[in-house]
Length: 181
Image (cartoon, rainbow, N blue to C red):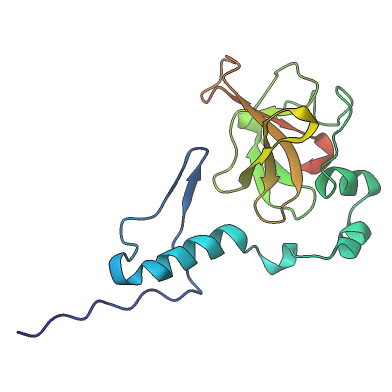
């Protein structure tokens, strides 16, 4: 009997779409497995680490593109002073918030809420727009949030604070790291 040859994996130029949630990473059901597991690992790692070439800049290019405050927040992981940000008390009925570094769509106006923390707060983000990293600076363990496209520092996300939101999360975002349209 003749054995069927498995189909070749899809081109690495078109990796599968990944779904990332705070606690999991899942692949679509049709992703190759078994003999093509090397392709699978490659697709996952490249999808998670490669970003659009327009967002890959040298530090000198970032300094030339961003204001000094934006550079400090987005590239050096700085923090806006509490209560002084442009978007802290900004509650539009509609519109979107974008990364000040690369223009990537991060949040919707509907996801913003008043947490009283002194920084813009969102209970969720646009799917795939935010990457979470463990941050152990300042003697504590927190979850840093960065723009997936350009790795610009946005702020931190906190969970379990009992805000009356659909996710019980608070994305505490620096106003300097975002723009609104």
